[in-house]
Length: 82
Image (cartoon, rainbow, N blue to C red; front, side):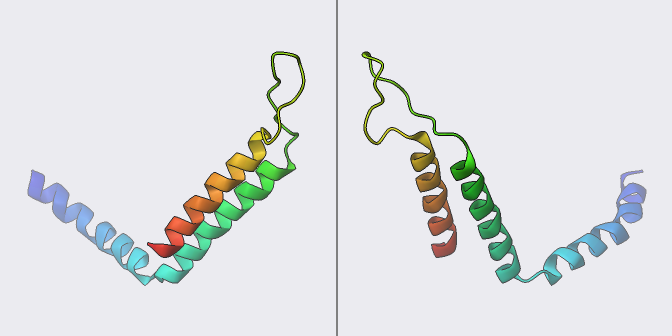
């Protein structure tokens, strides 16, 4: 029974493997980089997220969008290098 199911699924698996193998790695890296870039642009377009001090005043360098974009840039850099 198992062999019958495996034989039934083999052509579909080979087709999917051929399609995936045909995509160049440069295209995959570019797509991932563009997704990270689009996400960074979206984060920048959000309203500022600044936590407040105990006195109610915003702290310096606490805009969370900056850190989100920094993390996305670090992730993109690591993906490009490795």
